Image 1 (tube, chains in turn yellow, orange):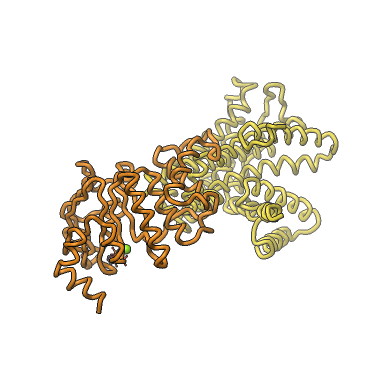
Image 2 (spheres, helix red, strand yellow):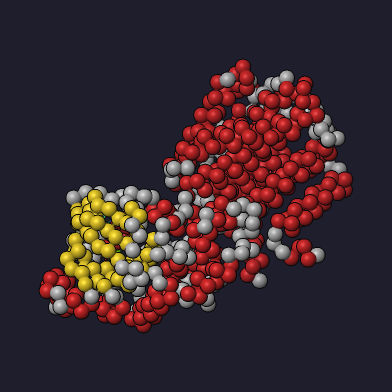
Length: 324
Length: 247
Ligand SMILES: Nc1ncnc2c1ncn2[C@@H]1O[C@H](COP(=O)(O)OP(=O)(O)OP(=O)(O)O)[C@@H](O)[C@H]1O
Ligand SMILES: [Mg+2]
């Protein structure tokens, strides 16, 4: 148990695998497909929200166009799996499709980031939003490729690989959560590394670093690319889940979702956005089952958090625990 | 060490720096004085590359640093502390010093170590000790007293191991007692590290007490320079600056 005391990468890997095992046991204890669906969605959306929180929580940049990368990941994966490459690659198709989705999202993030990162505050937010709406229009315009407003039509094959068949609910559940947890562990390493403290430094005071011989812009760009890549990964998992991709995933309201999750869960704790995704999904599930006024309920809950706790739930809990 | 040659800068119509030339000797401690708005901070901003130069040149150890970027100039050995404290509010003293140390070594690109466990810890401790921040080593910057925030601002500059240290009103906003403590600290620092120091200060007693060489700035131009003794008896200075204060 010495392993648990030290806050290091090994401990995080251990804890991550432990959580993964517990969730797998949970799958058998509670054989309710509805709940399994919520859990895997929480991880997918949690990845999306955590990637955005690199920018919001650690860098202090309110990016409002993060769905661009979610959508680029989803469409890349879908289009690739619909292509003839699958015939040749067979068992490698899905891993290659995911890697490609992340790669395309990272390239897109580089292109958008190079331009946006120069701006500050509201101008940065607006420009990221503008780029996202550009991506949205492109998806709608390229009807022949993307299916336009109908989304990617006709589904795509999910050839088994390494004995994993994503067509089976259990395989999908275990695989999605595994990939998410590994990414979260790597993300925590990033946030706790010197690089991560460079982010906090820029957030606290963007003027001083130059007087310490530091280049803010390069650091911000790298963070933006990493955030976009992880959002792309989340999008590709979502596409695998829904066996499709939809233009709404590139719409501005999709960028607002991870923002809500960050607000609900807390931007100052590493797992806050994941907790936010859990609250978001539970609300989504129970509220839509009982009323049509989902937006209203979500709005009221966020209002309670913002006015009542004045912070996200996990932030609030951690502060309470530390006071004791 | 630091050489400035016919430097000028204007903001709109105001000439904030007017044909300034000066040369700091290695391992010397120098004061820059002048009334409010004389252009003292502007001169620091020009030296460190924070703002662009209109005319003139700047050298450090015969390397021309004119028109280099702020971060490049920092790596060539010029560090500064700011008039208005310029620190990282959510980072502790320890973490602030560590990011400064790592920035200097280009170590902030590292993604594979844990910051908390970084081998730089010992060095950070010694910088904190040198700056008199050992007691508040684990305090979050925003919770420090004003005096300690000023010290942290200086500690960040010290972490860069500069050849030339520029201090912009290190005693601003301090009471008399705290002020002398700070000056004591700076004097010790200077003796220990063999840096070349240029500080801006309004308190004449302090300036005459510790500066080897004094530059008097008025409306952007240097109107006098010399040892404390020379400055005290300089007619121009008495008329333009020291005299005004005594009335
Ligand atoms: N970025 C800027 N833009 C426009 N004007 C400026 C700028 N920075 C300084 N000035 C002007 O240049 C002049 C010199 O200002 P500076 O801050 O260098 O004075 P100072 O000697 O440091 O004064 P103080 O003792 O009050 O700190 C002032 O008239 C100021 O208003
Ligand atoms: Mg000033």
